[in-house]
Image (tube, rainbow, N blue to C red; front, side):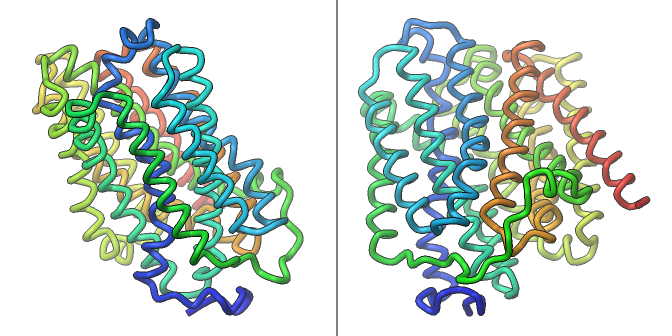
Length: 395
């Protein structure tokens, strides 16, 4: 059932709407995960260092958020559809050019362009969900389904990347992303109708959003959850492939089990959230991050890197990621539903900056071939978020 302020043309059933919107959300994440199996080989391929290759992951994450500060307000002004289509085409073009690139500087630059395209498509997609389902029970359903689908991306993306690279070479990974983006764009051109409300309230200033205590605390929680996975996939190839001697496919299968833990948890998350409430779910999510970090620290200190000492603790962290991610968007954006594009943009921008900056610092300063970056990030961010929750509840 469409929102009363939305154009009547958006009258799709929930499954149809999900099939239309989900590909853009998935592609934004897939550009990170499908590339992981070849990350250890990229310094030799591009004639550069592992730190520069790490930059292709970190810059993608940072620009994915920063771009939304630009595209969110634009989508509030001119509409969701043109922002979505333009972003998807930019993503597709950058993906095809990445498949043909040979130099490290060009590769890094194209990853930035690819992230810009992904950020435009992502903010338009989430703004559309807010436009159509903000006041409907279907909104919670579609966010949950998005979460379940996105949990599948880290599970299947590296496996797909390893198989594609093994059969067709690393360039085929990016060519595949380009083809998928073209297919999703053609579907959107035919079926994605404009959903921007005809009469919108004045958009809140960025500082108004950033001064909201609830926005700050729940965005910190989202950053803790997403950053945990970012640091995990930034370190996992070097820990398991370079350090533990896993093959690309073996690494991908081990990596996928963490995402499977997220998928299984997502299946039951709605029940937990209903019982615990929004603050309780976020607090328990942070507690799981702390527990997983403690297990990682024990494994790093007293054993060698492997499945039991690196992957199994990540299962615990993955459960925490789901508990937190299930409630942070509603907690942060509740007061800004009528300015969805701008509010979503700030939400993702702040999260991406925190993850990109502090996650990258953890990897670079503590060594990307150990578990210590993940231990430090999860511990620090979880404790800050829990302090923020206590402050919010005391207000």
